[in-house]
Length: 496
Ligand SMILES: Cc1cc2nc3c(=O)[nH]c(=O)nc-3n(C[C@H](O)[C@H](O)[C@H](O)COP(=O)(O)OP(=O)(O)OC[C@H]3O[C@@H](n4cnc5c(N)ncnc54)[C@H](O)[C@@H]3O)c2cc1C
Ligand code: SF4
Ligand code: SF4
Image 1 (cartoon, rainbow, N blue to C red):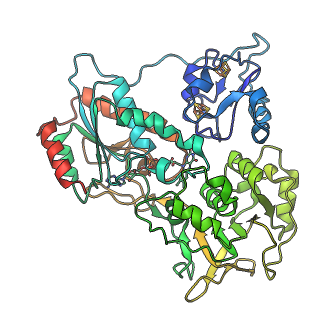
Image 2: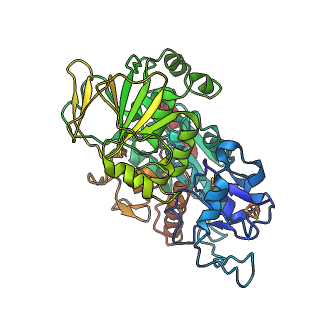
């Protein structure tokens, strides 16, 4: 029985390299890699060896006959990817998939002394960079994070009801505890220690500091009390030390979430899921308590464009449909038409079968809890003086709500002593090299901007580490001025 990849896939491609018949695609060498929502097993070629399931860090692969009811559709989702695959040579040999040429892109000559590399940030990007350096070289790594707990968004972003995805942290933990790694928590670069100090103690510094601010809506009322960044809500239910346990008030019956990306789906799902099912997760106890007492019955997601352009990925929407009631506000006939004509696996197609009646916003939310997807709907103003009262949209509707969560994307913040591109909110550079600051590199969201799942950071780290090693071989890295012990005592003195 062939295997299938399912909802939690974060496209890190670990399974690709262990598959003996090369039947998991797209591989990192193929043009589609990074453009698909996940990776897919070709059921015609799979020999049922199970190697991919053993290797997957988030338990996303399983035999088709063991798929639970909620995941059963992934048998078809995997097979559908290969339906029109022109490269398949089934005419020649049923199990044929072309292998890419073998390449060793990241290594140092054997007589090279160990590099000392500082990595700032312990999220996926920093950890993939550490993994790459520790596995391919004899480098010594100083791993630094401003927070007292490591993990970045895997710890403080990924939703608690996605335990398999959070499970990737045990893979990263191996490299945090590696004998050539020293971990410094509670040490903020740019505040407690400077870039210059880091550079003076290391051959190279890699910044993996993510994107810790929010994009702004730019509409009147954006800062009315009760209008919050979804980032704050996410941090609240994930026990982020920067957000107080009483930061969220769930006394309103309706909440409007602006945006239709995966973060918007996460917050809507947490708000409407039966708290009993969240009890076994690592959700913050204060959040669980508040959700148990919550008055919220309806969460409305506003999307600027039609359902075919929604920002969520289809695996996330499929998962949402399993657990809570989801309806689409059919306020515009084009929305209903787009859903009717879409192909089954398309973003609009996965909405087929949902109630698409027009929602009457003058009426209170119906009994029970539900999520309303409202497409073709741009917010023009958030209404209310002392507290959010409603959201006005471009078609003149007024949606009464007691809270607004702005889920329109994260934004990178400037890193002290490094250049910053205000437009993209990233540190500019070339293949991970920071422009104009030799020996300094970036990886992850601060390099590419805040998009892409956990696995996308793996390829990104390979590129950055590749640039760093090439610079080392070419003699472009200045050796450290001070020893490791000196850094250790400096860092321990400064950390909070
Ligand atoms: C709410 C949310 C849910 C998500 N869920 C999923 C999911 O289910 N599956 C999936 O595949 N992807 C998910 N993602 C995407 C994934 O989390 C990102 O791709 C990934 O975290 C980006 O990695 P990063 O290392 O660049 O940034 P981050 O994970 O943000 O890590 C940055 C780290 O740098 C530290 N730092 C920042 N500034 C400093 C400083 N000055 N000094 C020291 N340390 C510093 C921070 O404390 C943090 O630990 C989610 C993203 C969000 C926002
Ligand atoms: S079960 Fe084996 S053959 Fe099938 S996809 Fe996984 S690794 Fe490849
Ligand atoms: S998460 Fe990684 S290893 Fe698991 S199925 Fe997806 S690409 Fe393969």
